[in-house]
Image (tube, rainbow, N blue to C red; front, side):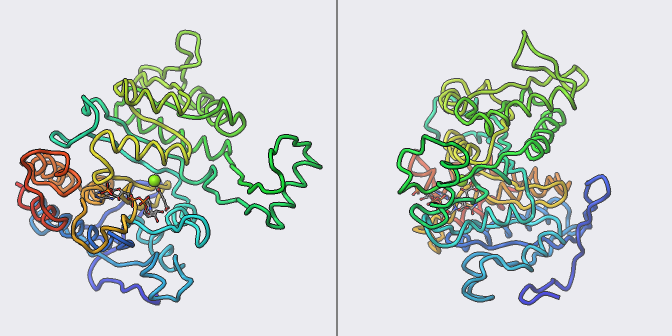
Length: 416
Ligand SMILES: NC(=O)C1=CN([C@@H]2O[C@H](COP(=O)(O)OP(=O)(O)OC[C@H]3O[C@@H](n4cnc5c(N)ncnc54)[C@H](OP(=O)(O)O)[C@@H]3O)[C@@H](O)[C@H]2O)C=CC1
Ligand SMILES: O=C(O)CCC(=O)C(=O)O
Ligand SMILES: [Mg+2]
């Protein structure tokens, strides 16, 4: 029994089989978190579009029973002012296996830590999968946006996101700094009296389980390459180790061999001959602008992945149209790349494209491919008809600028 979550009268749970495949009933219960800020605008539009696509694709034989679960500001109103991520929300996301969420606010500096990050860590959703695809007609700051066709694998459970940090001049920071100087012979903390300290854990286990999924994805989806993006020249035992463990795993588990003497590698022909390569993060950020066609699947650490997600989203039209999924071996929580965009909250103005495309990924994950295809086709056709929200309209000529909800309605009208 839940305290505030109301289980729909109709519908069944999705089940995970022993081999981690899903058993999806025709009427699954899907939990959703509305989200803070523009969550109130985009989440209802997403549900309406998804319901229409399913009705259209399956003529009433399949349907989602939506079940609201709570996190962020809405949760504090229901469960108490300090309850940002109730235990029953985590329990429902685990039990019902597949869910979707709107964005959640994280204050900068003090205050609560990120609810988004907490959700990923508590459910061990160690993969953040963010496809970057160009829809024809979308305004872009680059000359050939169609050349940017990548899938970002962002490690979601480690790195500086572990939240192990101490405020400058606190007793804890002093203790750590003393330990580093006295016991670890650290001599190069430039201003020890006033330094805050953060710790960046990156493990072999965490890296290997993550890179294994990225390589398998490349094989299954017939992709050309997996690029390990890191800053290993500076952070040798975290980001450098990530690269080394990645190459090591490609060799050990996938039979990769050195290409032209290395360090790049190639998988055997029966594994698609996928190239495994690496690039230092700063060089990567300039090369994605200059030669994006050289990159395909990109596997990187948590913080790099955060920056890269927004940068690549901008190249294909911005974070109004950037979807994503957080995945463990069994549980999946889908969510947009963008945040709560508070200045637009409740104005029915923003682009619901990111969360709708996240739902499209969710439908594909459930095996409801026909409904997912309808959403993609509707997105392509609506944008080509120049029916767009403000973010695209301000960069295009001759558009019909529509509201968030009207864009959703236009998608539904384009589902043919
Ligand atoms: N997964 C999550 O839940 C995430 C949560 N956050 C949180 O969100 C809050 C706000 O973060 P902030 O840094 O402002 O980043 P946001 O992504 O919320 O917004 C930044 C800008 O991106 C544009 N944008 C965002 N969403 C859309 C959309 N759907 N359609 C069109 N344009 C959009 C807007 O640009 P313009 O002003 O040019 O119109 C907006 O001002 C913070 O608390 C942050 O921690 C941030 C990222 C992810
Ligand atoms: O949790 C947050 O506030 C930010 C998360 C974020 O930027 C992301 O997931 O890309
Ligand atoms: Mg981000």
